[in-house]
Amino acid sequence: MAMQEDGDVPKSIERDLERSLERSVYMIVGVLAMVSLSGGIILQKISAGAPESLWVDIASSFMKELGIAGIVALLIIATIEQFTRSKHQKAADSLMDRIKTNLFYAIYHRHIPTEVFEEVERCLLTKNIIRRNYSVSYSLSIIPPALVAEGKISQQDADGHLFATVSSRYELHNISDGSAKAPIEMYLELPIDENLRSYVEIMEVKIDNSVTQIEPFEYVKSAADSGFKKETTISPHGSVKISLKARTIKRKTDMEVWASRLPSDGLKLQVVAPEFIEVKAKANHSSQLTFEQLDAQTRVWELESGIFPFQSVIFWWRAN
Image (cartoon, rainbow, N blue to C red; front, top):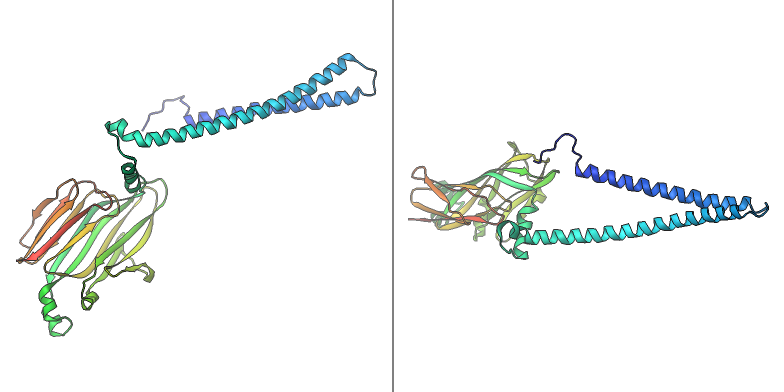
């Protein structure tokens, strides 16, 4: 933040004072011109019935000419000023375009193509909401034998699938000076077998530790996935905590892609799986994931770097 010493006048106030002074000068000139013109006309009418006087005629003509000249001067000045401001505005707009194009060159001495800059602008520079402290947890477990015994799922499907409890937690921060709407969404891939789709469900949505209901119109479903999308309003420079929980069913050999549609400061992924399940993970990112195995069933990967929208972490598993 720039320091301001005592006695300094901010640039915005200085510009306002200059405009006020200009308007005052124009008003004074206009009033004097009108007074001069009116005085000349009045003097001409008064002297119309009086004996001719050269000095009166000269004074009357001078005052009228002076008034007309003042009005014409104001019109010319206003026209020139309007033209000049328009020209300066176009020059300023052109300069801003060049600054945007050459900004990276000025800093990094690299010519960044316009298309690349526009993508950075669209995905990062114009975003009001960012995500912080992002963590995702997958808990894979075998299909309970009781479901097979009750005829709710076939033995073949139970042998080839795993239940997955999915949860994510993060904070949404408004980095703008005004209120902003933040998206809260979650999508789960649907199994190909329609008989298994009933096991895919959103179980809980919390905003600032309070359970929030999903309205019917907020559910989103397609042929490939199912989920929801809702919005919450965040005050300027404010934040909210989000917690989501869902259940789905996955194959014993399968994969998942977890992508963010918001800029994020990182991502922590925890996968809990039976010991006979091997799990791997990789980031679609310039940085590598760090890895830690907490116990025989719990693995943790972390991407300790900023994440652009649509960058992702891929993880996959298979039965040994």
